[in-house]
Image (cartoon, rainbow, N blue to C red; front, top):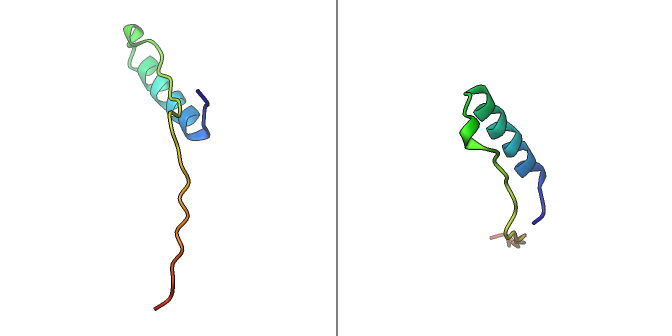
Length: 46
């Protein structure tokens, strides 16, 4: 599965937090995109 900038940021923050809290049994957190879609909306005046 592909990675995203947001996913990488979340991984880094969560893993850093777990290491700081000294939770060795927690392992590592991985964030991946399963599905995404872009939606386009047209707004008409009036």
